[in-house]
Image (cartoon, rainbow, N blue to C red; front, side, top):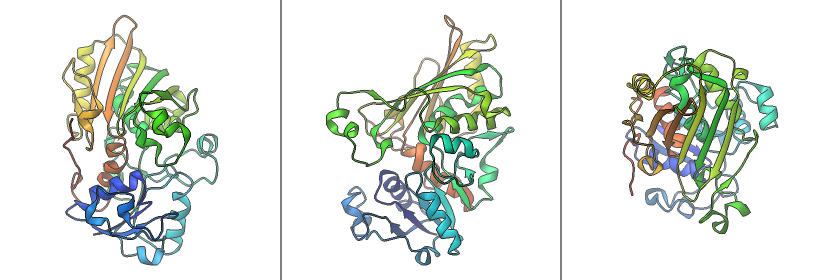
Length: 351
């Protein structure tokens, strides 16, 4: 199957290419960009020598029509416009948007956190998300348009999902603090992303309810519990730490019912027992980003803080892996009728 990437010069585009190039059912077709048109891919992704001499091209709907799938690895505000252009030009390929343009079901949330033109939500690309007890896989198997979740959203959702339907937590006081690698910020040249600011430093951003992933997290919590998104009050504080890839999420909430760490751990093991990419760690072992680097794996742990009656859930994932590219390919496999984990890397890189 021919596969094309729009936004091939960026971090997300490069990671999708790394997976696609080794995928047994995929053949790299068009590599598209905007400001980098005419340049060779090797200038941006020297770690992909097999594709280094491929030229980046402008988006041409006619040239993309032969692709079985097109991945949009673009900033928010761009993918929606290009997707609309492709559909209006008669492109019927599977479209997989790694940006934010097709994630939110609420236009009011979009207007508040993003602004600009609102685009209708597509099928959500998190196979492990349960909707009324049924995984999102069934929806992905019959779609032609996929919205890949935000990386922080994936970390928080998978850390907390087993608790949602159980009614074990107070939904009005959920606090998520995330240590985030710099690749999540993309390649934009900004002062706070320079090495002089990053190395030996930890710096928070989008503090005080301003992070754009907050409504998406609440949306997922509502889907997983059957409640309304407005029922969930989520405080999200991401902190940039001096690593290239990875997210370590710590999510806490008041325990609504008396329980124990053993009961919580058993709940998580039962909930995720069929999920190949999610590892519920043994008691006393904590998630760490290095263990999941380069893979689609997610490490999860849960514990009860008896001194404060708070439930603490933790997750670790690669923000470019399960946080973006691995999730995109995993979801595309389902939509294209392939085995879900074909080409998906389930082995991390360490140290």
